[in-house]
Amino acid sequence: MVKPTTLCAGILVLSVFHPDPSPAQNEVYLKIQSEGFKPVEIVIEDFKTGESSELSTEMRRIVERDLEFSGYFKPVPPEGRGRPAAVLLKSSLEFRGGKGDLKCELSETASRRRILARSLQFPIERFRLAAHRTADNVIRALIGDEGVSCTKIAFVSGGRKSKQIKVMDADGHDARQLTANDSLNLSPSWSPDGLLLAFTSYALGNPDLFFYSFDGNRTFRMSSSRDLHTSPAWSPDGNTVAFTLTVRGNADIHLMDAAGKVRHRLTNSPAIDCAPSWSPDGREMAFTSDRSGSPQVYLMDADGGNVRRLTFQGSYNDSPAWSPRGDLIAYVSREPDGFQIFTMDINGENIRRLTPGGGNYEDPSWSPDGMHIVYASNSGGRWDIYVMDWDGSDSEQLTSTGGNFAPTWSPRLPVPADFVEK
Amino acid sequence: MKFFHTLALCTLLISAFVACNPGATRAPDELFKSEEPAEAPAEESMKAPAEAKPVQQVKKPVKLSLETIYFGYDRFDLTDEARPVLAEHAKKLKENPGVKILIEGHCDERGTIEYNLALGDKRASAVKEYLVNFGVDPGRISTISYGKERPVSAGHSEESWAWNRRAVFVILE
Image (tube, rainbow over all chains, first blue to last red; front, side, top):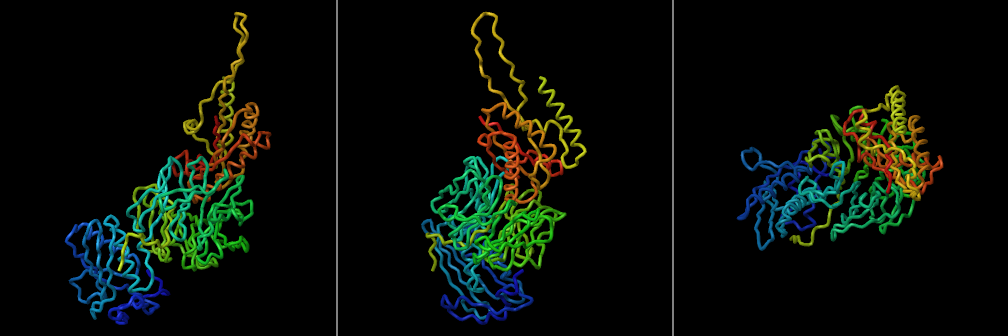
């Protein structure tokens, strides 16, 4: 379900498209219909290719899934329908010396006007990302928003003996392991440019804070004291990391700079203060504190001032996650039927339960466009990672191996240098 | 052997006492033993051999064993059951001044990973503080939290959870 207050409208408005659009004109903002938004019907033709049809079939499936997942589109079959779909996507795929060459054309069915034509060269083994980029190109051309098809999800995977940090595509595919020690690795958190992943690791015998750098596959230890360092959260400008530091058993939220120097202590109470989550404008953060006697969600300014309690319903509220849209905070609340995921406005009102019970639901994390939430749940019998719409509808399972926790959604990521797009 | 009998008697008494408290049921000994090294007999002084050789005082390392203590749900304060146990631990530690220990703080599976890491740390620190107040040198005690990451009981019942809310004593070499 797409928020009515965002962009899209139905089929009628598509006549706004101009022929042979320049890149600027390609970004067409459609008029808002406040009620009854209908997804744009799209036919995605089979990829024309002389090469492996398995690859092109999978790429087409990825494009279709990404477009449907965005909430803006409804992929429909080409034939056997009374009414034609609004838009048509034709693609062709060739291989040339280890590289794939993908050409796509998006056109309006009724007028046959071409909305978008793109050519993408990519290393063949990165075919999944090429398909994801195609979906984002379609979304950008028709909706005007940047899609999230190329984003990733970092998470924790393992059992009692050891837990490792992994990263997978946002559709659950292609999971790769980043850490390789016999220890506990927890609490991953992306930098805003997607180049670093902060996390906690017991690899050196103490819960230390590390940065993993995707550029060069290197890991750096950032903390130096023999204390507990956990729940890192990068400020939106990327200059500061808020995190929980426990000294002599007392957990407080601190700020660390990019070099790992602890600069500032934000909370100063004998209670447990942890789990910071920044507002998208970087001026405030939500966090968990049990200073009232049980864990509740609080807000404070980025300098630690103006602390105010946000949750008053329920005896255990934790894990706040501020939506990138700025208007909602997701969090976890203990209910009689287990831990469930809720959202509330940033003033604490309009509390809304998203998850259906029948298990525990934890660790909510927003997609960069604020339209989806990834989370961990044991409602399927084991702990696995799922994704749902911002309002709790349409949940989809992303992992199935069990022992998967703490998902965190990446920002939009830089395009790899070996992708050439025209 | 006497020490072992005393320990067994204490366990029995504590079990009887705790049986009245539904939040701290005692499990069978199997669960209990899985975490503790076997109790070693107390050191006995060497007797001089019959031949008038000089007595060699061989220092055998004393194998200390400090039993796990347990916590109430979402609590880090020490229970009435834990305090006398910790007083005994303090006594043993003062009698063995060369020994260093690591206190691990653990939580049950409920609640978030991060909050439980902090809670486990609080539990370990509360225990350390108690021992230090009883005269144990703080330099001998380090603490670490494992939150809910290292449960000793895999179940999802109240009883399992009670077994996982614990502070574990690790004797460091």
